[in-house]
Image (cartoon, rainbow, N blue to C red; front, side, top):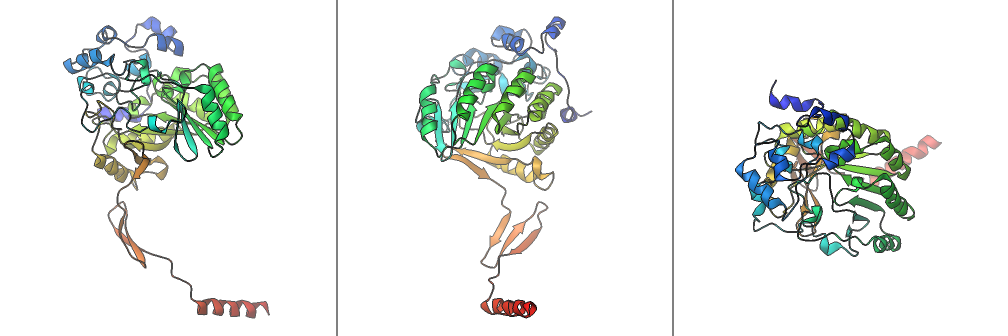
Length: 397
């Protein structure tokens, strides 16, 4: 079987690199967190590192910490130095170089923060940064300046001031909890936060952005799901970049969330050598739909410091959308977006399907490259309306 074919099925990956006795606690998310790979010694005990990786790990403590859950670590193909899982979570020396175009805060969040921890960039919705910790740390993290506790800044969240801001700004209808990862909180703490938000009448729906279902599916317990479904309408956006990440354990965790009535969407980031091909993206979106997750966004990788080795040309994202549109079900096609550098918000990019336009018609290209003319509406003439009225009156008699 071709290596790629293994990514089209759901497989279990426990316990892999860990001793057999680890199986007794493998499904306990607290054990998973206690046993994360977070040091050079841990990593070298299980993998042969390249010189670039070893140097990257040594430098990681000054920028973005390294931490990898056992579950996610087991997805690494140790025989493949270019393994798409490995490249997402194991630091490389390239992270230490900042390209001229890169920024500490590429989405301009700090400049749209009326209250520490609350980002109000769009008219009717806010981003609520509730924690700076994650189960594992993605090496392209757009908030590496504040996430993991070793970056350039410390995350400050003024809880009561944030709640007061939400209470007084009645134009806000949508709150996205992110960070860091909100699902690292205990059920009780998360319940208190969601309950406080639900007490604000003009907040119509709540969202949680989380990679916990991928990094730590054991955390998605029936008790957590029972608590979350009290706060509907509640949406969860997960973050999956490669089909290998969708294991049996992840599929079952997502099923528990979906069965609790929580709509699920996926956000991917375009990453060089990881998911920058139509073949990989098609396998990913198909597996997501099998997990009842709607492919929502593909992001162009933000201009975060030290990410140039992972960023792809913008044209790659457009080519992927073109390779999906018309070649698979519409539900499987995400929107490709760039977050405008410095705080411009999400800007959608699509292949050019409008070839020409005039007052009378537009010329369109379909997914096969064929051209079609679509007429613009013809204005109805007064004489035609008068004739129709006469016909209607005649029928009335």
